[in-house]
Length: 251
Image (cartoon, rainbow, N blue to C red):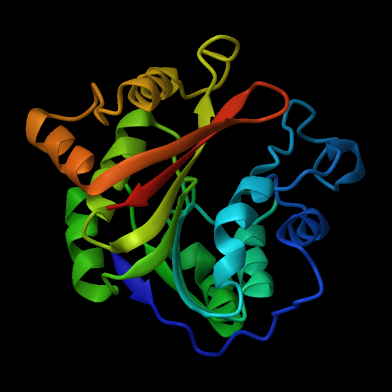
């Protein structure tokens, strides 16, 4: 893990636009835009915009003008690199933003100019692997332990996703929200992508009905930890029935 601290304050804040309007302008797939209108739509014809911002704004709007601590895993999508951190900077008036990525397929030294750029925007960048327990231990030493919001949009591998939730119990404040993106709909998209996290989706859908938060990807103690620390608020299916967005709250 390596932390690159921000070198400037946020200058992107724009209170005149909704989160969805910002997302669509920046071309992130978290918005609602028709992909055919976006610069990446032609090159990735099977990818769609998930409309997650409509759910995000429901939980984030009350905090828009307040000081906010925000943690996001996965910020350098090659289709729209760094669009999501720029979106959060534009939406929140006073956000202390930490973004994590491991630049899958690239070396760190190849990304130094980009890191400097987002540091200048006001982003604290963390070079780390969400599946690495040693990296998480260092993150907990270097970062605040009272984040308001956590957004997980990393590797999409189910073990990484649920372990990140388990690790976040030490970083998210009570009443803070944790969002887990791109959980495959077991009915329609199981095995459709290079990864398959539909078994984790089934764990969470079962938890939604039983009230018992647990996963087959965790051991007994880890399951006890997430059940004691988090409550599953809702599972939101996108309009195309491809993926769910899980919303959890820290107890």
